[in-house]
Image 1: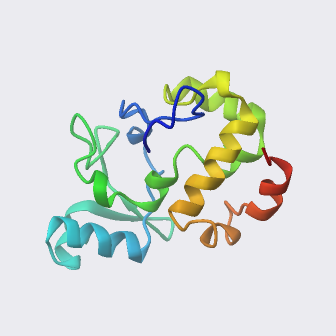
Image 2: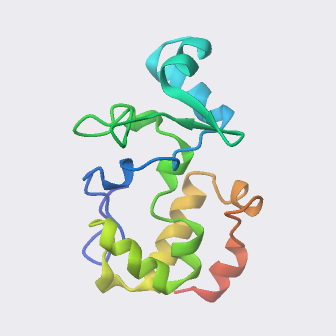
Length: 154
């Protein structure tokens, strides 16, 4: 995500803090296809090298508590998984101002001066640009983007 000016609610600083930890990088079949194409390797090879199954979910492996693709930056940035593309515009951060405030401790790219409403507006645009708004209506991280759009209109 690029800087849209001084009032941007989020501008990625590429610090890698969101690449640390275990269990957060769950991938979809589309993510796997995109990553395989980017790395120019077959799906089976990709799965063997980079994926693991935990509690019925397919996720990217971690090495020493870091995403396997992190090496002083994201080595697959143009093809990164959907969950990485959406960060920090996650359900909790969008719906709950306290969650958004707590996320600021872990993400220097979140601009607290912009305010939560500006963060939500930017997030809605970002998720729609990524064509994630239709996907986000299902599952545990569901967002009602139409409702949020109405609540946080400029």
